Image 1 (spheres, chains in turn purple, green):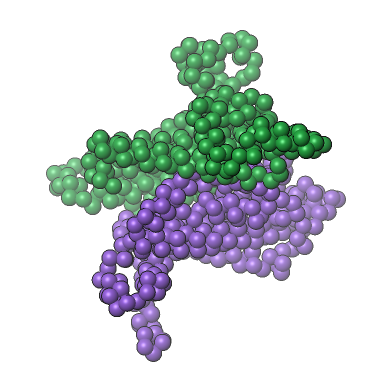
Image 2 (cartoon, one colour):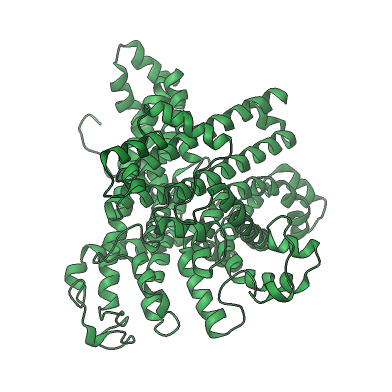
Length: 290
Length: 338
């Protein structure tokens, strides 16, 4: 690494190898699906057939057809357009929640795991308490007492999610802290914060990455459920759970208003879940079952 | 074993204490002054002071927390602002209905998930396996509220095979009234021999239970498959194969028994998760359980009721985990060390 560059061979050896098995084809499908969804969300203003949140009461509840591929909703908005903008909301929430929980959780977990002792015990007990709530329940209670909105959803879910990352980082840090090379660094007088950042943190990155991809689907489902209950995003923000809620009485008469947002949630969560599982199988050598 | 039991119980108590503290903190986050909410916006300073004194809002926070814990332990979970009844009484009324729904769903999930997992393991990496993997992934990726709406629309509203909503036909309350013992309708109807209500409840139970069962069935199928495949690499499997047992017989007779242990502990974990999923399903099917109660409480910002529901489910979760750990401690001595 002294030259600062890696040859192709070195790079290939450093990167974990992804074995080509049938199950990984499923993960590949998930990766492609997720890439398409992310791209669609990013490009929404340019690829959406109509402007965001443009009600046209005279064109309300049109069935899927030439001008509106997925039909229009009860106030005459193009469903496809709302779906594309809704992807932005869902992905923004998922990314923010995961970034927040991983940052807080990994920081606390690494410090506690490396330091050990009473600090580790206290943080373990605190995470125990948070893990005693099913994620949706705690997020529900928090969102219920705060003002509904996207920011509330992000905060409420992040508060329920960080303990998983703290636990994960703590177990990695605790196992790394006793390795000879860490002992050696300690004997050389390297300060603890430097050891944590240079030797412990890199070891936790792979499991955290796997956990992030496994969790993304769950976060999207919880966020959609909160919006469905009226505790999350609200008009005029486009959000899939909110679209299902607004159209639910129309399911029997105008199926497209509810069906497409639901399918969008299923597809996105499915893509995240299979991709996460594929990554876990490929990157975690302890899991031999494939 | 006694030491393990004491340690595990102590841990559970500590977690419950933390859960109570966290609920207390959440309830303090409610915007606005509870004294104003009680005394009304036009209340004088003296009336506000009286309200504050009445609810102990002048006390230091630790004193308030202590009073809160004391009230909870003595069975005073506050009064619902929405039903105007003690929260404990409300919970006792709605919790059994949720238990009924989640219980039925878990029975369905195990009945479907285990055989599906066995099927996938038997035909590993062949078509049935791929189908099961995709299917179980879809089952855990589907938003429950949407699945509930979809099944309700197709099988109740359009086809009319199942009732749209409710726990049983309301008119049965007059033609064959139910004697309550446990508040769980199915159980009460069964022990009192009330067949009309029993069949009606089971009929109403099918769709919501199927929706709640989707997630646990998917997870159980995945875990059963993984556990079976791991067992099939063990020495005892090689011996059984050498002795001439067929693959199917090895799977169902020997491997499944060993694989059921992780499945059992999973059930306790998905139990609480399903409880919260049931919230959303109950709202759709108007099932008279905890979820519908919580939805009403959220709509009317009924903080004592929200706190009550949160506490109850969290405590159920802690107890379920405790039960599984103790069971595994009994079955497997290695678990006691942890």
